[in-house]
Length: 329
Image (cartoon, rainbow, N blue to C red; front, top):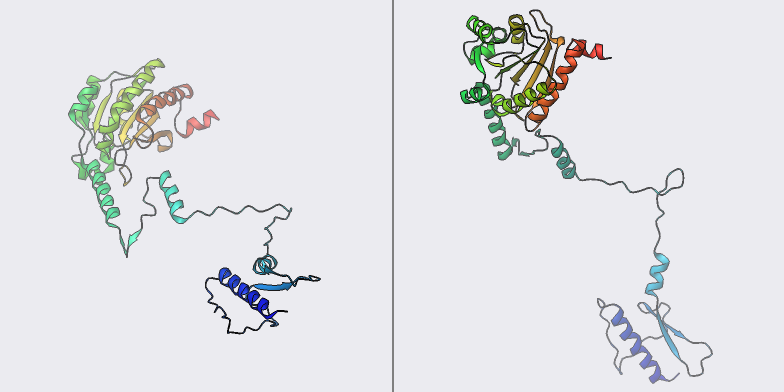
C-alpha cells in the first residue's frame, strides 16, 4: 500500500477520534511523525476496516460506541404479582403532605413542630391566646341587651359567684328561693315544652349562638304545633337545674341551652340538653344532648331545627335518653 495513502487514512482516524471525544486530547501526527498502524487493539472507539475484494484498497470507518451501549445495556424485569399482573408503583406521600391532609380534617394542634426543645413562637402565642379565650368564656357575663332582645327574664341558682360555681357544682343544680317564686309568678304552668337558657361554663357560647338556636327552635315547634312555655335565663346554672324547673312547672319536656366547658379549640360551643318530665331523682341516663353547636361545629340554625324533630320523637315515645333508644328499637 502507498505510504502517503496510509498517512492520509491515519489523519482521518485521528480527526474522527477528536470529534467523538472532546475530553480526550489527541496529538495530531505531522508528516514527519510516524504512527503505529497495526496494533492489536482498536484505537479509541473507531475501528479501521478494509473492504474485502476491493481493488482500489477502499477503507471504511464505523464507531463501536453505540454498538457497545446496545450490547451492555440491560432491561430490568417489571415486578409482577402472583397472578402475573404488573404491580403498580405505590404512591408515597411525603410527611409534610400527610400532615397537611390531617390539618384539613381537624382544628387540633398536630404537626406544629418545635424550635429545639421548645414550641415555636407562633404556636406558643396561639396556645396562650386560646387559653385566654377559654378563661374569658368561663368568667364572662352574658350581655343584658341579648336577654332583653329575646324577651327572657333572669333568675339565679344558689351560687354566689364564679369561684363558688366552679368549686360547688351542686349549688348550680338548685334554684334560689327568690328565683322559684319569680318562675311560679311569671311562667306558664304545665307547658308541653319548657325552654331554659344558662351560661354554664361559657357565657361566650350564649352570646354567640343563643339567638340563632332559640329562634330556629321556636319556629320549628310552631310548625309542629307543639306548645311552648315561658322561656327564661338561669345565671350560673348546671344541667340538673332542669329537675327543679320540672318540679315547679310540670312540663312534658325541658330543653336547656347551656354553654359548654371551653377548650383550646373552641370557647363558644353550646349544648342542648333534653329530658322527658325531669323531676328530683332523675338519672343522667334519661337526659340526652346535642353538643358542639357553634359556627365551627353544628350550625346554630340547623341545630334549632333538628331539636324540634327530637322533641317530637320524645313526646311520641314519652321517653328520653336511653329509654327513648330502647323504645325506638
